[in-house]
Length: 101
Image 1: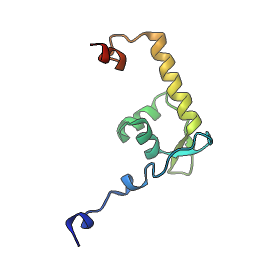
Image 2: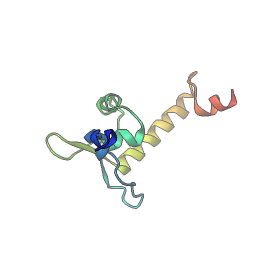
Image 3: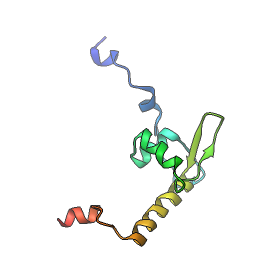
Image 4: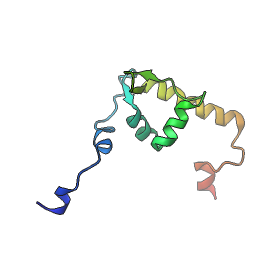
């Protein structure tokens, strides 16, 4: 057995986003870890976002598990985009600003 075979991948990395999301199923529920990976945020930041009043709608899967539907994630992302447009960038470095500089 090689050293590489002996190393185990953490279960969180194995489970999160194993397959592609289907755009045909907006009601598909993402687990919390899948949602974090999809939005490229850490677990801590994900929990902070979900605790905030302007976070995405959360679907309760069981007493201890929550998820976010693809539709609710998309609506949340669009609301964040609209909020930024209304406020202006407020001195925040955006991708467009970074490219121009």
